[in-house]
Structure formats: C-alpha cells, structure tokens
Amino acid sequence: MEFALDEDRLQIREMCRSFAAEQIAPHASDWDEAKTFPVDTLRAAAALGLAAIYVREDSGGTGLGRLEAALVFEELAAACPSTAAYLSIHNMCAWMIDRFGTPDQHARLIPPLADMRWFASYCLTEPGAGSDAAALTTRAVRDGDVYRVTGTKAFISGAGASDLYLVMARTGEAGARGITCLAVEKDTPGLSFGKPEVKLGWNSQPTAMVMLDDAVVPVANRIGAEGQGFKIAMAGLDGGRLNIGACSLGGARAALERALDHVRQRRAFGKPLAEFQALQFRLADMATELEAARLMLHRAAWALNTGHAEATVWCAMAKRLATDAGFEIVNQALQLHGGYGYIREYQVERYLRDLRVHQILEGTNEIMRLIIARRLLQDTP
Image (cartoon, rainbow, N blue to C red; front, side, top):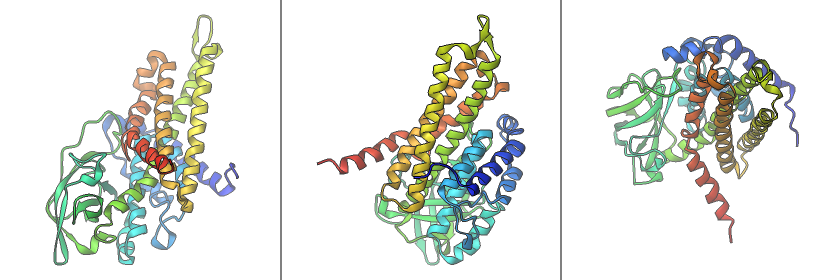
C-alpha cells in the first residue's frame, strides 16, 4: 500500500497546477460573468494531453490512468470547476469511443477529440428520463445503412458548441437492453438545439436541449453493438463520477485556502479570526473531510484502473462523499468570510454555485446511495 505519488504523477500535478494558475484562474470570474465558453484555453489544455487522458496511446490518446485523471481535474477545478467539468465530460466521451468503438471510429473520431478540434457531449438524460435513464424514449430506427433518430435530450453540456454528440437511443425493447449508443456529428440533418439554459453555475460551458427530428446517422457511427448502449453509458459514468468528484475536491480546496487566508487577516473583537477556537475546529473539520474524500476517490480510481470487482460501487461511494463534502466545505468557507463571501469579488460564491450541481449530475447522490445499498444487500443473508 503506497500513498505517496510517484515522480511522474507529481510532475503531472505540477504541470496542471501551473496551467490552471496561468491560463484559467485569471479569467474564470470573467468567463462566469459573461458566460464564455473558453475554446482557446480548452485547446491549450488539449495540447498538454488533457483532452484524451485515459484514451490509449495507439488510439491517439495520452494513455494515462484514472488516478492521473483525478489529479488533473482537481488541479484544473481549483481554478474553475465549470471549465474542468466540461473537460471531464469530453474525456468521458473520448474514452467511450476508444473502449467500445471500432478501429475505423478510432481513426476518424479520436484524433480530432484528442486535440479538441472537435468538442464532445454526452447525451443520456431526457426531459422525462433523468435518474431512471433506462426509461429513455429517444428512438433510432434502422433504415439500411443509417439510423433515423427522433427524440430530445436535456441538460446537455456543450450543446450547440460541441461537434460530436454521443446519443443513447432506443433501438429495441423497453428497458436497458434496448438502448444503443450513436455518435451524431454536428452537421447531421435533423439535429438542432434548444435555447441556452440560464443556470446557477457552470456558466463557462453552454447547456441546452439536443433535439433530433428524423436525424440521419450512419450505422458506421454506432458505438458498440445494438443493445449495448446502456452498458456503454454506465461504463462511461464510472469514470465520470470520479472526475466530477475530483472537480469537487479542487473547488473545495480552493475555497478552504481562501478561508484560511481570510481568517488570518480578518480581525474581530481585538484579534484575528484564526485565534478563535470555534473557527479553528471548523477549519480542522473542513480539512479532514477534504482529505478523507480525496483518499476514497483515489482508491476508487485505482480500482477502476485495475478492473477491481468493486470498482462501480467504490466510484459511487467516492462520488457521493467527494461531492457532498466538497459543497459543504465551500459553504463553510463562504460562512467564514461573512458578508464578503457573498460578494463576487471574493470568488467563494462562484465555487459554491459551480459545485452544487455535482451532487446532481453523473447520477444524483441519491442514485449513488441506491447503487451502494443494492451492493450491500447482495451480501446480506
């Protein structure tokens, strides 16, 4: 059992920390305010190998593992959780193509995703199918060498800006076994987008509905076999849950660091806030929760990378803990700032707004508890 990062991982972490400090942090508040999708910055991240982190090298990716990805997303999210989270979704899509796609799909689709000439979106959720994802109604009907796809996807990150959409559509029976994964390109006839959603946070990435009206998708763009789509979608989410948990760690760490700076400088009743024991205890609990969540997330990353039998449930545990703890740490950091925490200039409120959705997406934390409980009850006599 080895808890220390090796030299390669330390260098990856330092590279990402420097990139975040120089290329993301100075602009994050402006991106949030203006709702700017930072295309050039994302492509600069891709130039460092951060757009296909755990895609195999022979497919055009960086060929790293899930722990390295967790390190990357924590560092980037410490500057801007919203931008880091979009990059997480893009990586998840690239990996799904690498893992389940054909050699032809690897050659056509992965290189432009790896350098972010193309941006990718993951399309599972529908207006009437969120947590009950297997109840989706988007339908794809085969017609010779194409599928004709009709349906609507909701809350899609990158919608309208992305170039490739991994759409889960029903090709067969009701339930999970009737779902197929299709790679839909942006110029596909019949593909359109809803109005940009006005959101609490995650403002540096667009979110909208993806609408398909008899959209014609080549059979050559089917990822995996017919009926395999739900399995592919869930496999992608194991890693996505780790990544979004890591984004929560980064946002929480940044908020904790700001809180520490504030209590050292701010004085009340004749002394710095840092000298009040009640606040010291609060800071100690915040740091402990952050470290505990990081340890669990890194273990889950190891499990997913090694194909451990408990990987899915450990990813659910890690996502639940990291996103709940992350939001609470930021909330406490805002409280420690007092009124200043509510002011945009101090940035803690941006982390609060961005991290709140992490408890909802990639499977709500209630669904994470359901995954965990079902696994526990399998072993109950």
